[in-house]
Length: 126
Image 1 (cartoon, rainbow, N blue to C red):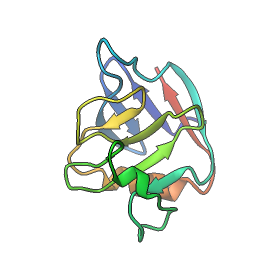
Image 2: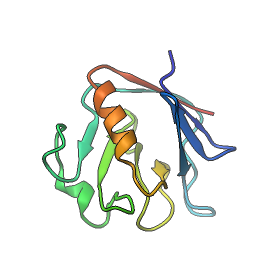
Image 3: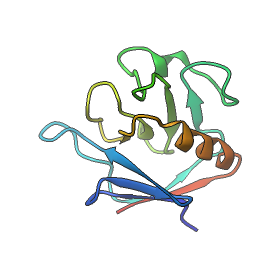
Image 4: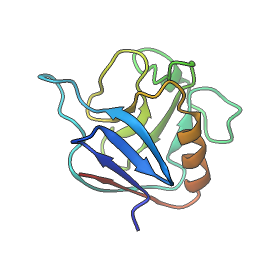
């Protein structure tokens, strides 16, 4: 069963009765997330600061990562392949192939991932 779908044509991530606006890649420099099915492993969600009920890793809150939404919240969900992940994209527009969430507030998506990441999460990129 697919939990989330990243639609490259519409630049959206949908799942659990929600839709978020996204971007992936940097035109002429980095390709978007490759099409396919991704099995996100248990415990793959990390926050840039402590206190959110998931492992915390300062690298996601500091340059060059700075995976923050426009409210300053930083997190990263590893997709289980290479360095690909889902994360806020509110600093410098574009990603190196990850799925960057461009909504101003990404806490709702983070909380869904936190709830689900006690088991594998299936993400389809089409």
